[in-house]
Length: 448
Ligand code: NAD
Image 1 (tube, helix red, strand yellow):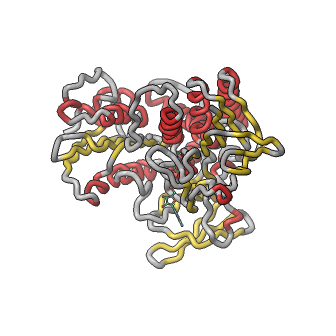
Image 2 (cartoon, protein in one colour):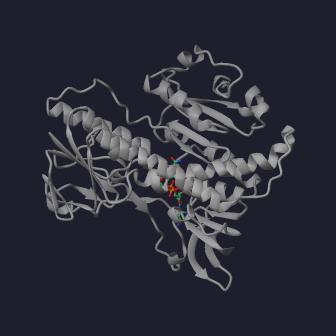
Image 3 (spheres, helix red, strand yellow):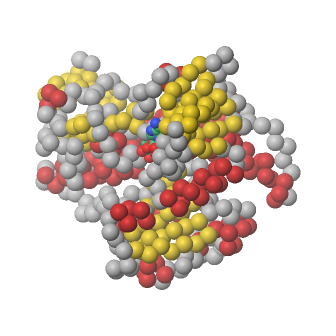
């Protein structure tokens, strides 16, 4: 059974490895370095710079904890070369993994010749099944002067730290870079079109994150509609409208972070009848496209654009292929409706499940239980008391429907609730679970 996977991001390469383990003959095609956006220009390099930023903050505040540090500032080239080393190390790991499993890795741009043949340069590869995992690309507002803006990829390798940085979009990418560059010493202004930052997150959480970032000196303008970017003698001017009043932000660098668009037009889908829109390839619950032996996973489907969502969608697609081919397949149920998400600002924010606003909109009767970091012993010891947790509980049957955490290590903490929700746990089940002391997880336990 021959499986061709187009795209070697976390969706593509992890599925390739699982498919090879299951006995399929796998070819994976990558038009760039393996690891995709996540490893090469997304999650991993960003988190590496986040860590440099955290160390700056720790060094600056060390004296409060009785530790004397002579902080002499950021060595940008060292921070960037470490980031490149981390990416390089993980990339070699992926290549090694693919090779070790006997997967054929082909570099180049893939395109469908027909529904069972994929072409890369002059090489034709026959497939019984195909998984499209071609990812997404940065979106750009169609405004005058858009050519003066940079993408998140360029923010990962700047020549210098801009003195003034303007970020268009207070989504995940915008806020992570706002936090990093604030620690690196830039004067940061974020312009957001919606009336709250992180539009898809719980409003309480978004408000607290905004307050916390503002306290750190990041200026955030919400309900701001960016009109244009223009070049001046010393940098750029970003013009925006807020309550019909025009204002200008002066900056040395302007980041466009207004979302990502699925890469639907690169593989010749029209000729093979795979249905798609500019919002993504249409798939069913088993990630199958309109052509039965072709599946699509990850950002290209336009759903939740997260690396781990792509990976688990890949598992769902592979299970469907194995079942159809009559091959042995691990019995597992993957619930794609419960996908945790995190924003690696300082402090972090994380969520899983429904927000209070989702429940209101869906007419679900819920109660919201809350707790704060400031009364948690571990948080006080760490000096990280800025944080809160909100749990959404169904009035009808007590099930946990969502959890929203803002504060230190929230990206790790939310996983506990994610696991419980996947098992359909109720508040009562959660209340019966012992949490170790002293840990940040007691923030969850103390909700009331
Ligand atoms: P996003 O959708 O999270 O945020 C884009 C923001 O831009 C929104 O807040 C939107 O309201 C705003 N915006 C849109 N038009 C605007 C305008 N005209 N003026 C001002 N603001 C405007 O997108 P993103 O931050 O670019 O991230 C892209 C994808 O990558 C997301 O799906 C995100 O989840 C994913 N990602 C995830 C992580 C993570 O898991 N930590 C990190 C980075 C990116």
